Image (cartoon, rainbow, N blue to C red; front, side, top):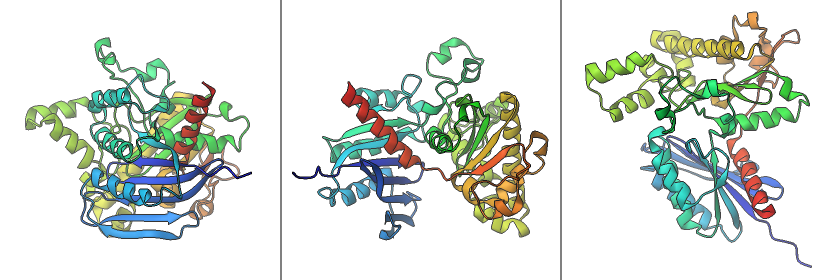
Length: 398
């Protein structure tokens, strides 16, 4: 009797200037290798691929002009190994599927048409995500492609949170609060569920802090509120995104400077936030500059103030707080930023242990802290693989 051959799931995570991918053995899910192309569009774009033991399989600097070029490089690399790693499915992180597409589902031509219709909801993400899907569909025409929506985690927020106080005709066109980073939040909740049997009883804030940053308030086991709204531009001050602004600011920019919608979007998405304050968007670079640069200091102060303010707001909205979780590149790695955000939050029960925080231990709050403060490394690609398995299993049952 011959053993059944292994099959594999590919998780694809398309960012604004990066393309990550992970290959997993499908049963049980186990990582085989992972890779990323970073700073796409720059002359020093980098491709790096590592195996499960973190040995480097490929590492080169090149000019990957756009997302199409990046996707084709990854496709070629995988196709050269397809006999060894036969794919059963490819999962794609999709930032936005409109109001009717929130749960993971198989990608069809009809779904792609829907995504194109909703490009106006995520113009900086959906076009590239559709290009990447098309590249993998062309390379693997007989392989199931699964869409995993970043908005899914927030789909059950209360109506008074989801709906904007605007005429209903706009909501009918898809204008509502969606929330993002949902795949990351879902992974964090899955990790917490392994440790806490009564997780649904806890009031939790998850802070996903990276170049793009947001927070989610989780109550009764599901998303109650979140800082991003209709688009990933709102909420916290971010690396190059403005975060929340008075609507009057947008009217001023449109009226006084005659900015086009495209110019306004470019300003708010790529030239605002930390970059606008200091000229630099990278958090570690700002921390290195801070002692001698007043603008870097101002940018860091603004970021931490923004985060602190939203923690207070979300705790108030839930009527309390039991747990604060830091994740994302900044949340996982910067003890300095975590310390500054948590400073003076003892009035809601947050009291971190400075030594534990410096050591990046999983639990960084003091034993006497009323609120548990944790650091958990997110893994969106693994969550995508898990969601893909769920869709495949459901298809077999049906």
